[in-house]
Length: 212
Image (cartoon, rainbow, N blue to C red; front, top):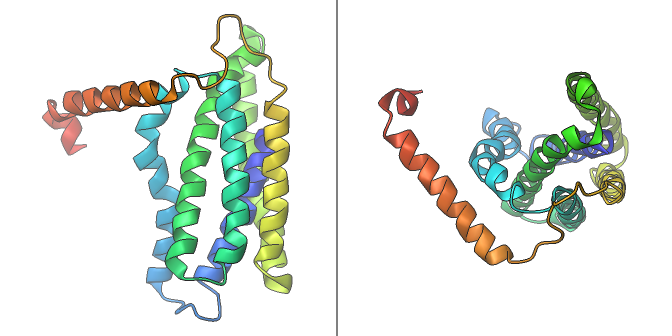
């Protein structure tokens, strides 16, 4: 599941970079590189604080499947966006990475329920290694596809891999007592925002943490 998802990361990130940096209308300046780095890195910092409280309120399986479903739609939306204004392409890339943050948090949260306690450390290390290798592999494959064919050629297999990851996630058994579905999502999102606000207030009350 993780390998398929992160291989898709390498594919669609290469596709976006090939348009923004190396496309016919790209200026090939450091600013263009900065744009790609910003859309692939910043969402992890901006969305990250929300993921923990969010996934603790819902079924981890629902989070994984829902994130994959959204990412398939966003990735397919990149196909027509490639020929459109650059800001739309970058906005969709930000959305893809942001939703992916929930997938990664959900994967980390569900991993302890899938392996024996004595094997968790090994499973966690293996999961991180597989993720790194498959992301690089996706980029290695996506580069020639985008270069020799079109950027769209890298996006289509990316969407297929994400769908496959979602299908695997749907088979994860729910642990006893875990909530099913997304009931009461509006009230839960409100509580999630409240928790994040409380965390920010605590952070701002500690100068050392703020300077960091």
